[in-house]
Image (tube, rainbow, N blue to C red; front, side, top):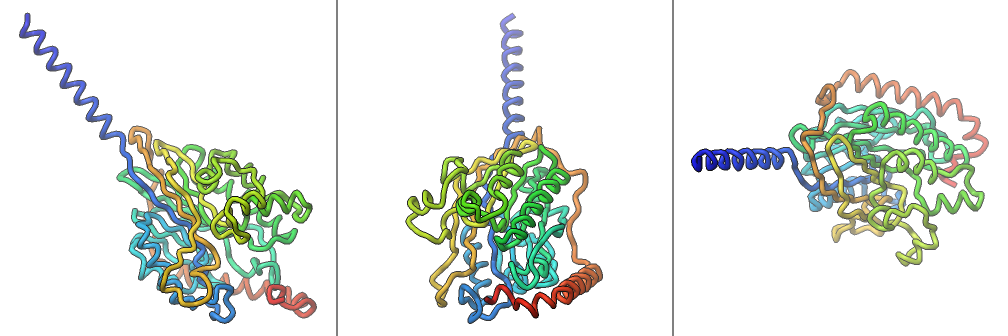
Length: 370
């Protein structure tokens, strides 16, 4: 009888050990460091640049600075004419295929330590400004989305975007339409249960835009649009969560008093990283901050970019029993003929738009040079 009991006890312990081991194998925890950065890749001579930067050298330094952060995913905006420099210098060897330089491409690219699949670009349906108000109708801005495999069989959808630049009434309405288009794209691609990183240059912050709307300077409350379209849909803004305790209702004066400066390169800028859990992937925010990314090698009287980068560091908890892959996984590859066709179409559209608005140019001049 004792032998039977001993055998049963041993069997029970073996089963318990096997269950625990399987549970450990099904649960994985890792870190993830994400950076969103408008790298100011326009071919503008340094004497005309707001940052007085030699663009090629600044791009090389940006790559060096990113490498030193142990970044896992870099989401870039305005990655136009110096994409080759950025690609060559970065340690992140998985990257999207560039859509081209300024006028041709959207300037959006993602660089990753992990494999990238299912790359898709969408141009904005709405934009405003030709020879003024940011000239957004001459720039094919939009959103890029892809799926990143952060662990074997574990996927996160990553978005990066560049919204309209100006703050006139029509540009504000265009941005509102873009945020609606973005929300619809997320519903289509990621649904409601996939983990998502939503990054980019939204050209919208919370403090000055909210204050401006309340003062009657703006015709639409874009802060509320961000809250309605994304925060209310399960997203969290990494910088807000890390630095204001998740309080999205603050004023410019409150932030100025807290940070002791007028120019918001370290707080509540136009650039954001939003995040959302899903499909067995839980993103626990450890830290988020804005960073000039400047270094001792900056010899000009300005910054590496006219934007600050956004850093967000996460602990990622993965329950592999709940994760699911997309229906299909496709690696992006260069398509030279498609690129030439898209480039020709983009140039033709830009020229056509410029010609249509030549009377405005004759009458008003170039608004952004005033």
